[in-house]
Length: 187
Image (cartoon, rainbow, N blue to C red; front, side):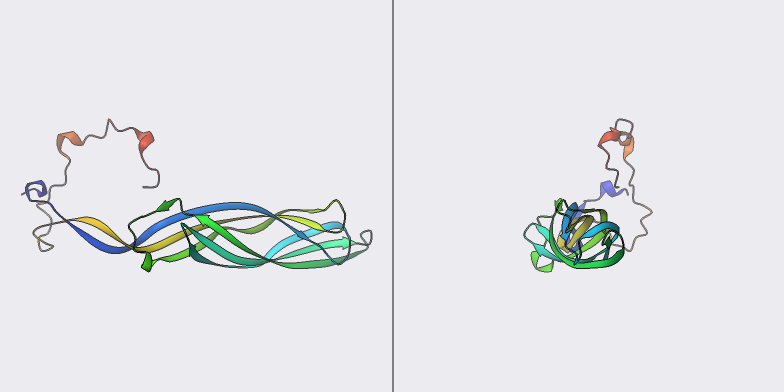
């Protein structure tokens, strides 16, 4: 007997699932004022990056900090020093996907730095006393929560071995007429 011949039953089950996702890229600028007027920039690094994720409205806030280290020369390139500054930030990442039927009391959020903060440019400011740093960073966030999903139930239960199940699409199951531009690449 084919599955189509049996009365199809559906049930709602509660499961944990990814109920929200988002991603955000940002380029930010910081100004660091070293103790001496810099003559040239010899290097700039971002180290000690730490962050955590918290739910905030319809998005997820990434709260974190990192240290900027700038190696520079001063006194007409006769001496060098390293200027250090700790930067704190709060980045709101909007959720591009959100399951409206999830249970809010079960939300768990997480963030992953898909691009760690990285110094892409360091220049001496026009007044000659500071260094302007351009930093790029990117985060991907997820929210996992309990949600309801609808599943088809086999009336015979799990005892049958499934050999009599007919999952064919029949004559109308040809896929030749499908528009490949409409298919989701992530499947």
